[in-house]
Image (cartoon, rainbow, N blue to C red; front, side, top):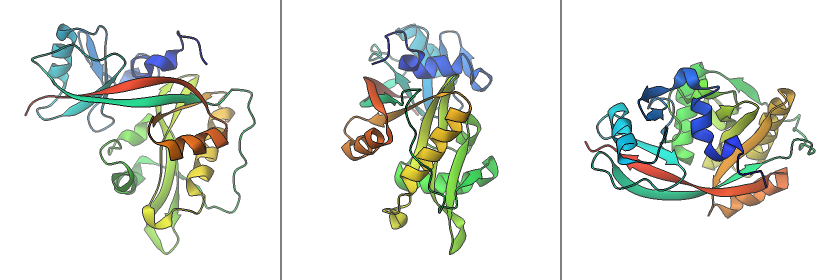
Length: 234
């Protein structure tokens, strides 16, 4: 278990104040990623005033998520509930899983963003956007019989060096059961280890299948956190 002052415990705030500071939209007590990058925001204080500042940064009808305590009642934003998530990390001295040399893993760029969005829209709609690719490094496997179709990918999202979040792990339903997700996750882990970074991730607390896979890969549970969904009325 990491100490309470672990920067990853408040990952969105610390990413937007460090490595991703150049991506941040800010207004007084609120910061957020642009909507075409990620649906995440953070507040300097958990107050109606801060929520009003966040409202200023959001487009009508836009939804975003904040990490931590439930926000107070607000006339500015609609509260749409919370999602419990586990924060997990691989010990920095842990053995990393072997990367399969048989799989054609390729580095992805923002030129591949439409294919990345198409894949993630099948796996977890709404979280991966056209410019999410600017947040970190991404890797994928293309369909050998349809070169324009990305069938599996994994990469990085929140980065607060030396902590780097593993994210975007998904496989198209027609290509599951081939070990692609585990191989791509291992590839990202080796990439981060080469940068002397700490590897972490978020997973929904009820996703027991994914949690089991992450444990097998060497991840340990740090804590449970809550993502609170907020919507600006249209």
